[in-house]
Amino acid sequence: MPEPQRVHIPEIPRPVQEVGSSHLESTPEFNYSSAERQPEVQPVDLVPMPNVAPAPVAIHQPNDLLVKNIEAAMAEGLEDAFTAMDPATQQKFKQTGEETATAISKLLQQSKIRVKKIVSLLLRWLRIIPKVNPYFLEQQAKIKTDAIVALGHTPRHDA
Image (cartoon, rainbow, N blue to C red; front, side):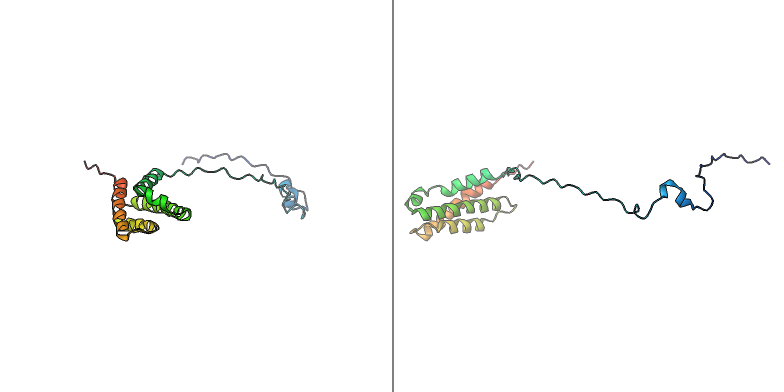
């Protein structure tokens, strides 16, 4: 039978151990006293952050143009009624109109346009005008709704 080949494994040098001492005490890596066993923690100087306000972030709203177009459609034909109002009513009418235009633009961006909701929003806004026939207001709300829905309507291109 052939003799198996022997592989030479080099020996790892080990530290010389003195008589009467343990291996842990003689090895430099493990020679710790009780005071050295706890790691030293160095205090860190905290650097105060300067009181700087964050940079303003420009919020880009893609529907600004849509809101402006809705406001223009809402204001159409109401110039005389607006100038006849007192300043407090004008301010309320203007603020409510801006809120209504924003709400309508959100409704137009949904997949299903709720026309009744748009009519009710416009009626609520138009009722701020004093001394106007309610049937006229309903008629104006419906006319303005048709114009606004036409603004928000995107034609489909079926291929």
